[in-house]
Image 1 (cartoon, rainbow, N blue to C red):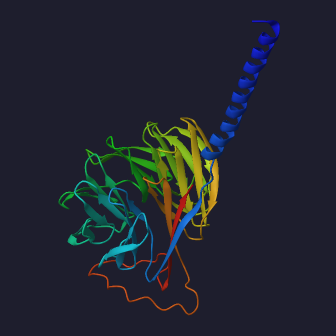
Image 2: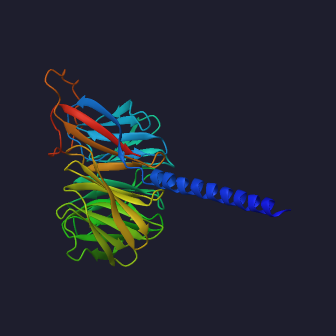
Image 3: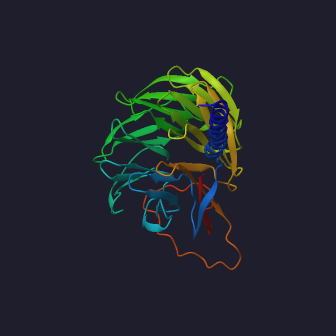
Length: 360
């Protein structure tokens, strides 16, 4: 090989290396751009009706969305948001479903139990207190019905609807989260604490104090893998992040005003909190002790409760708004059953129910 052949080969190899570097350099921003794609409202549905609303619940196994409103529970297809039925005579605040027995339960008095496949009522269950929040605990296959007044928790066997016991938490419970390993964490709104429940013994073990870092925790998210709790506090507009093992406070971050719900998505390593002021706060867990507010999404005023669609990594929120002038009145809702409580909640008169889906 002569001198000129050697020079040509060197230049040729150099050109290939430069081209590869350019391709790599162009690929990195594209990957980062995809990873940092912002959240936004990707779907909305409005349904005319009457009655108050509170919580929204995604049955991710059966792909259904439950919205208690007035004296009934509205049921939608989680993918299309089209109505698939109602559960009558259930003046409820929330819903939980056992994916094994396919039994659904309402946080109402009495509790309504139904077949989640057919939506047919199976029976009603008498409980004490004033049912508010509700949760399915998977390790024991039980339903936890929460009340601000005693008893704070009524525990129901999801298989047959029998009452397994009650628990006093020492405060007014709001949202809860289970680690699936025997521990249930409950936000105590009036005590600025997180109660830890041993689900096998049905007893409270420690209380984790927020140490003045946040006030009136209402929403709760749990990273069960890294044992991290996200307590979303309504009065202080703060997320207090703490260890689920010992309650040690790891960080505090700002959120919007008036939270009443939140959660954690292990697929994206993001916690989220929905607020009454029309914002959804997304918090990124960049490491076991590192957190940052990733985005504040504009939703709608009053959209303070939410649920996670785990299949699509989307967050579903609800609120109500006054119907435009000239909108035909909705058909009358079924009357409440005997013994079912009233109470003031959002949108009790004729109004549009807004279902908002936030995704990337």
